[in-house]
Structure formats: C-alpha cells, structure tokens
Image 1 (cartoon, helix red, strand yellow):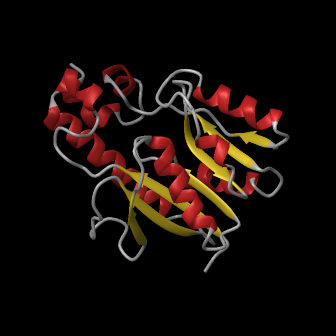
Image 2 (spheres, rainbow, N blue to C red):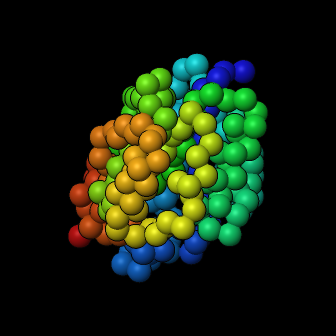
Length: 203
C-alpha cells in the first residue's frame, strides 16, 4: 500500500444523466458519447501515476470493467460536498498521508498534473486545481479539513476563492495548479482539445 492516494469521482455513464447542459444543445446521445470519451481519457491518465493507490468512487453503482483491479466504491452523501467529505474521511481512516481527488470531465487533466498535486502536498496542507468556471477540478490535502466541504456554493462562480480564503484565514497553507476547463456546454467542447473528435457536433 502506498501512502499516496488518488480518488476519482466518476459519474456513472447513463444516457440522459451525464453532461445535461451539453445535452440541451447536442442531445442526450451525443452528450453520452462525449462523457464516455472523457472517462476513457481520465482512466488512461490515472493508470500512468506511480507510487500512488487509486480508488474509484462511482455516483450510483460500481462498474467492474472500468479501472480494472482498482478498489471501487459508491459515493455517499446528499450533495457534492458530503460525497467528497465522506470519500476523503474514509480514505484518511485507512492511513493515507497525501490524498488528491479529481473528476472525470476534463480532457486536459493528465498524469503530470495529478502528480504535481501530490508533490504540492509535500510542503502544503492543501492543493487545488482551478477550473475556469471558478470551481476546481482537483483537490488534495494531507489531513482531513472538514470546513472545505461545509456550506459552500457548489457549482457556482467563486467556489474556489471562497474556499481558499477560508483556509488561509484558518492558517492552512494552500497551493494552486494550472487552470483547466471542464466541458459543461457546447462552447466548452468547441474550445477543448477534443473538439476535433466531435467535429460533427460543432457544425
């Protein structure tokens, strides 16, 4: 067992349940295909990590043919904050010392960025990967810090700024990584590195 852990928060790939904002423009089937592609990209990148255990936390049900031979769980909690808090809390209870968590909807999230997140935890209490929409695509810490997950404006502008301000006020050290954009709508897809894979949707 490594002392480093990557938690992947993965939505189950269900038609009509993923990339719903994108689906309003391109339809459920196309949104399903985009998200399926993003999950595959994430899986390939996580497999490149070294000296790090990988746990997959699915939104609804464990899928055996994704992340084969990795430990898998079903997320617990009524909102995003609770689900992340429970996953981190359970993982620290297993004696991991550095834990980062990522989602599965970022085409440019690679193993190097995830490794940079783990490296940042050598000298900082927390690390975040800023998303262009004001949230974050990566979160990491060296110990459980519950306030990160409590009373936050999930999926709204300013989430990261509010979170960091609170942590600094409490005396924690924080590192931020390179900014990335996740794919929520057609404009995000058009500006992304996978646009050419879905050129038929962008005409």
